[in-house]
Amino acid sequence: MSEHVSAFHLDALVLEALPPGERARVQAHLAGCARCSDRLSLRNDAGERFVAEVLPRTAPALLARRRRRARRPVWPLFLVVPALAAAGLLMVARGRKAGVTDGDLTWKGAPPVRAFARRDARTFELSAGTPAAPGDAVRFVVGPTGAPWLLVASVDADGHAQVYFPFGGKRSGAVDPSARLALPDSVILDETPGPERVFVFASREPLDAGPVLRALEALGAGGAEALRKASRAAVPAQTQSSLVIEKVKP
Amino acid sequence: LSVQAEPDRVVELYRRYGGTIYARCCQLLGDAATAEDATQETFLRVHRHLAAAPSAAEALGWIYRIATNYCFNELRNRRHRPQLRAELPESPAALRLEDQLGDRRLLGAIVRRVAPRVAAAAWLYHVDGMEQAEVARILGVSRRTVINRIREFEQVARDLRAEEHA
Image: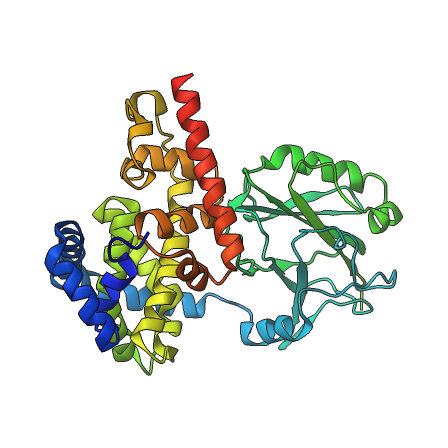
């Protein structure tokens, strides 16, 4: 692959990011290679078009998008992300007390999932022994998923199933398989006490939500204890994992 | 960076690196309008890395990593499915993979069969002309992983050709 100058080196040349010796080598090659010269011209044309047309038109919109994005999280993510980094991928708690248990996180490739609750002005992880309460706003952090499609859905002991990501969606949402994802929407817990199991399904192709919800409803129909013990759902995902949130009234 | 306190700094970074991101997105996505939006999305994802990068070369590495992955996710998510039969080259065996990838529909067909990270590795290697070790550095994976991803991509391309000519 070394007979021509790589795109990276062409960009580095434009950005004046090449060390002197490398710059001289690239320029010498360009002087004698029509193909690479054409590639550089195309790249420069795009760069000039950006400066002349795209930049003036999009810079205000970019700043506005950035402000919106900065306001969007209802969570202090600066609390969540360091917690993830410090704890590694996930906890392997299997307690049956109120709080969260990770039921299915042992098989290879399963995307890790963690839950963080906000109550009043306080944010904390729903780890084993930490119960959730009605009205808590819960946000999930998933991944890396290792697959490009993600569906997150939950079921409670009443057999009520719901899609959390994409929220209320009909099918899986596209994600970056190599990135950790903080789901954009918070879930406000209802008054129903008992367990709610949240499943994370990662797949190479999008999953339809309908069959997934039906599979989860079947799990929930078994009642609270069955839901606490359920290890996985009958869903054709490449990988799946889950956790249980125990809702108790304070 | 504080949004309110340093908008000028953000715009400065956008001005300095936006052209590179835009050129990259144009090349990957194949049309200027889509590339504009992809440029903004990529910049919003990468600008903190750009602000913290000790050199333009390192900043460029972040741009390549994030723009390439973003664009291949976009390509994968496009709703319009390619019509392969009418679009594959008549004699694909005579063309290099690098040249075949200039066919946007063929590229789209391949991207739908592989993960974006696989397509990104193959593009960096076959189209951008980078060494495997450079690809590994840009994507933050091992060289072995890069080799495996390139092989997977090439196999899918071969399968598509075989299906077309069966």
